[in-house]
Amino acid sequence: MARAAQRAILQRTFTHARIRKVCGSWWGTEQRGTVAEDWRPAVGAPTVSADLQLVADAVVEIQEARHDADYDVGGNFTRQDVLELVRRAERAFEAWARVEATGGAEPGAFLLALLVW
Image 1 (cartoon, rainbow, N blue to C red):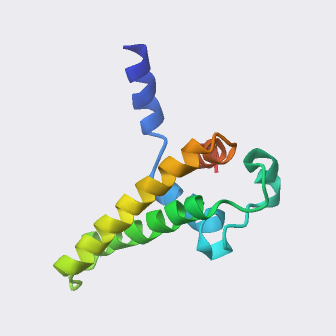
Image 2 (spheres, rainbow, N blue to C red):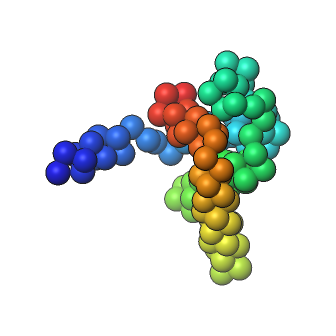
């Protein structure tokens, strides 16, 4: 019961804008996976893995597509466009599983950045 309540509180701290900002600012290709210097000790490296970069880039791309779908009334998505976005999301989940499987500091630092950055 307490764990479910804790999860509900934590869930509300994540916003699409914050997640996109974190993913786009230094985890993804906008910065070529370069970690901000003050975060390097938390990540354990000056750059993030290709898998985490894939996750971050997918979040940005899919979030932008969602925004377009919600607010660009003149926009149009083909079935092929949507299927490619679904495949992109699937590849991102697979990449995240590999990031977590490393047992390193990277996944925890990424999740921490989503909370505090």
